Structure formats: structure tokens, C-alpha cells
Image (cartoon, rainbow, N blue to C red; front, side, top):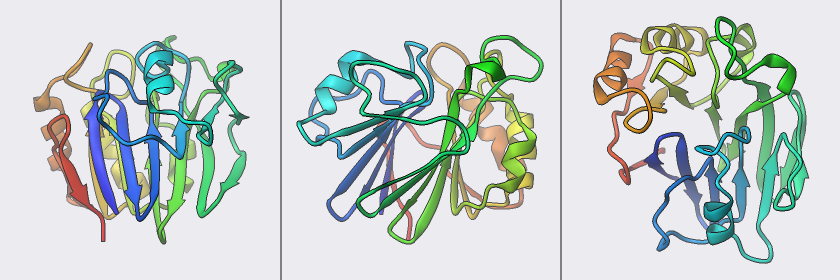
Length: 204
């Protein structure tokens, strides 16, 4: 399984012939077409119609918590969806000390089961109690602060979830720097991967 950080909150997951994107934004047009595109919410840096159209073909499933002409499957927190060999579950994503991502909007993070592994993309969120019930091999956590949890809060979220691997996201564009990403190294719970845009790592 190969994991590529696309910059900001964007992630591409490839396993055998399956290609799953989460929150693609400002991506390379040469990337492969998607089997599944998961959108956490409708802010422009997470739901880019141009990127979704570019990555889609006639069989692409577009999953999101909001209604849109491009969305084929609408999910709310707590839902589960099976698409081929991929299982998608939703976890709430919201702010608890700011107003950018209200809980009432029912925006989500995704728990993706693929190839015998479980990956959790938290979406735009603070550290919330619902994370404590997540079991994942790899987590993608925002670290930029301002609109999401800070790097220090992400370290605590790693302690809550106890994954084997963590990838910091939501930095390097709009808010957050690589220094914020490096703060995740404070966690001794798991292996932290600090990626540059376009970097790919393998998950065995």
C-alpha cells in the first residue's frame, strides 16, 4: 500500500488497483483517476470541484457529508459504506474552542479499511472525544492550528488513538509550517512521517 501526501489535507491511497483520494486540492493533473474520492467538508481547500472533476471518471464514487451535484454517496457521522473492497466509516470532525467547523454541520473524518489496514483521516477538527474510539494503523492529523487542532493537541490525539504510524497534514498552505509537523515527533507512541508535498511512503 502506498500513501502520498498531496499537500495541505490531501492524501492519495493506492492498494493494488484501488485509488482513493481524500480532500484533493491543487493536485497534479498527471495523477491516476480515482475509484473513490472522500471529502470531509465543503470548505474550498477540501472540496475543490475542479480537482474532483479532474480525478474522476464515469465509475468514480464521490463521498461527502454535504449535498452536491458531484457527490454520489452522502454520509453523516457514524455511517458506514462498503465500496468494493474498501470500507468507509465516518467520525465527527468539529471545533470545540472556535467556530470554523461547528459540530452541527455534521462534517466528518474518515476511517478507511483497505488491504487489511485501517487509516484515519481526521478532517478539519480539534482533538475530540470521538477520536478515542478509533483504532487505526495510520492517522492523518491536522497540525496547523487556527482552524484545526494545534500540533500539541495532535500529539495528544496520537496518545488517544495509539496508531502505528502518523502523518501530519494541514500545514504548509494557508496556515501551519513544517515546524508544526515536526512537533508530532514529541509523541513516542508511533512512527511519525514528515512528508513534503508529493512524497510517497509504503505501509506494509
